Length: 254
Image (cartoon, rainbow, N blue to C red; front, side, top):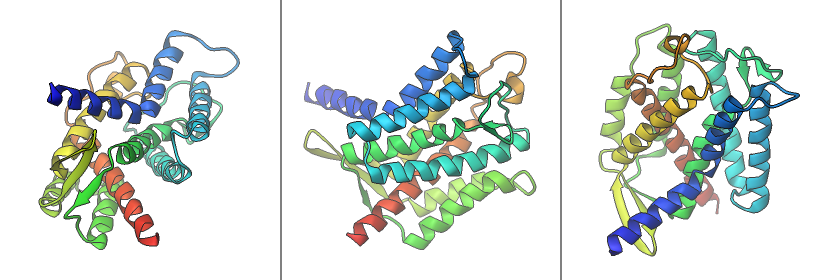
């Protein structure tokens, strides 16, 4: 029974950490089912995301430092979105007043919501990193993974080499967390895979409700290829490495 209670409490903490992503998915579903007046759907999604961000900060669910991290992820995601849409990887076919090179501004919040989850789960579960690699290795690896999202369109795709490198670099690394006063830990590589898989599920939900559209979904919605898990896995790794690095830098400043 104690194990069940711990699992329920862990799930509850995870659910609280996912407030921002849940609001985004709910907004996608609502605006797909109900036609809102005055503004195009993409612009309403932006308004909802901005209001949600303001409320989370005002209510104390999010700290100012976490807002800075989330803003950084919004910019990183928006740059990637502009490039990927330009290369035809996916598209945003609906109308919108607030678009940059065919990309609605709300799209950056989908990346920001991943950062929001990581920041809140980190704080709620009192995450601690064990056997964390040197700073320069982490920064170099994160930069290489992010750049590969761009360069593989013009050069060889090295995602699998990067994935293997992640396993080598973080082979001895663990993430420790606390639930109801009890400390647990799991291999960091396993946590990457689990988060990446659940984000792939979230991607299927998002595309079903028209958040964006892959070329094979133009005529009718279809399941996102399982190979996309590798892309989301690498994106999660970049997100985690950035958050972890910023947390360590902040601790050293203190």
